[in-house]
Length: 245
Image (cartoon, rainbow, N blue to C red):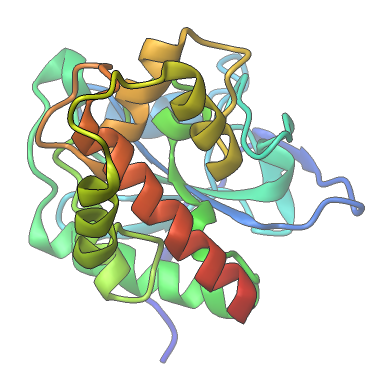
């Protein structure tokens, strides 16, 4: 069944590099006072920002840029060693005022539309689960969206993205020596192996971005045992999903 999409064309896009695969689904919040302000900005040629889709809090779905074109939503960003994230991603903006204007939960209607849209996109593009990301993942030094209130676990249960398996995390936690100091270097290597770029931001900011996505109960940028165990569990899942790809 075709999704009920309203066309809301933005002039802010350019051609994709045909050598790059579309292998990232990147989620944002608009971070502006309301939907009208956000849409006006994404359609303003002077602003030079856009996304492929925008989902309002009532679930209304707008298409601003065709998927075949390169929208301008990631900015300076990095994942898995790649820096042209705009060139290899589909960007979805979720209407939410964000941390600056009164961050709040994402409504049920909005989440339902997102899940339907994301599943539709994944049918067209071979995007691995570990590359369904938030803006904060690819730009940890300057972005927080979609933030700790976003329900990444629900997306994963719907077949969209990756979420740490409780069993894997538990085993990883048990394997950690409680008397041994944590090794930030080892954690940094794990974050980089997972995909995070470590050149654009302090390690503390990268750890906080990881926590914001995968361990939102405590976001402090500290390499504690829960964070290390969560990362170890995700790396185990990553090995499994890549082997099955």
